[in-house]
Image (cartoon, rainbow, N blue to C red; front, top):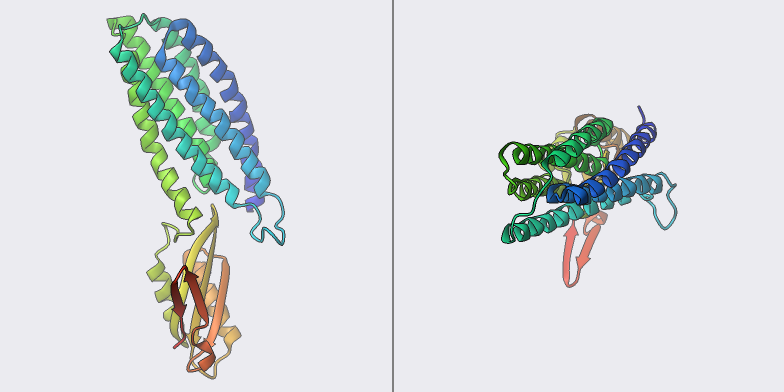
Amino acid sequence: MCIAHRRTGSLKRVGIALSLVLFYMLVEFIGGYLSNSLALVADAFHMLTDLAALSLTLAAFWFASRPKTPEKTYGYYRLEILAAFINGVFLVSLSFFIIYEAYKRWQKDVLVVDGESLTLIAIVGLIVNLICVYLLHDSADGNLNLRGAWLHAVSDTLGSMSAMLAGLLIVVFGWTWADAAISLFISLIIIYSSWQLIKDSVNVLLEGTPSHINLKAVEETIRETKSVKDVHDLHVWTITSGIHALSVHVVHEDGISQQELLRRVKSRINKEFGIGHLTIQMEKEGDPDNQCICTFEVGNVSSRGTGA
C-alpha cells in the first residue's frame, strides 16, 4: 500500500475522530460546570487541545500533500513533525495547568461535587474516546503526526476512566477530594505519554539519526561491500515519518565499475535498513581531488571530510 493511499485513509479517520471530540468536549464543559467537577473541566480542556491537535493534524496532512517547489525542495512533509512537536508541548503545558488547579482546590474548602453526574458523563466520554483510539490506532505506529493525535485520544481515555473512578468514589464513600486527586493523576499520565513524542519530534527536526537505525551498522554494511576501501561523511536522517534519507562518500579501489558498485551499495542499504532516499558520492582511491571534498562550517569551526 503506497504512502499516499495510507494518508487518504488516515485523513478520513482523523475527520471522524475530530467530530466525536467536538461533540463530547461540549458535553464535558457543560457537565463539569453543572456538577462542579474539576476532573470533568480538566478533561474538557484536554479535549479542547485534542480538537486543536486533530485540526493541526489535518492541516499538516493537507500541506504535506502539496507538491515540492524550488523553494521547498522536500515539500511540506516536515509540517507533520512540527505538528507532532506542538501537540506534545501543548499536552505538557496543559498538564501543569491542571496540576496547579488541583493544588488550588486542595488549599480551599472542598466543594460539593455531583458524583452521579460526573460518573455518567465520564462513561459517555469513555465510549467516545475508545472509538477515537480505535480509529487512530492503525496509523499511529508509522507516523509521528498521527501518533500525537493517538496519544491525545489515549490520554483522554485514561482521563475518562479516572473521572469515572472519581465519581464512583464520591458517590460510594463521599470522598470529594478524589476529584482533585484524580485530576493530578491524569496530568502525570499525560506528561509521561507526551515526553517521548516531544523527544522523537525534536530528533527529526534536528535531523538526528532515526532511533531505529544504528549508524555504525550502516557504515559497516557499506564497508563490507566488495571493492569499498573507505567510508566518510555518512549521514542518516528522517524527512518525515516513514521517509528516511542517507548521504555518504564511498571510496573505492581503482579499476572497477562505479555504477555496479553504486547498485550494490544502494541495494544493501535499502534491503537491510529500509532507506530509499540515497545520495552516494563515489571517490576513486588515491585521487587527489577527493581531499577536502566536504566542508561544513559553523561560525569559526570547520569540519572537513576527506577521501582516502
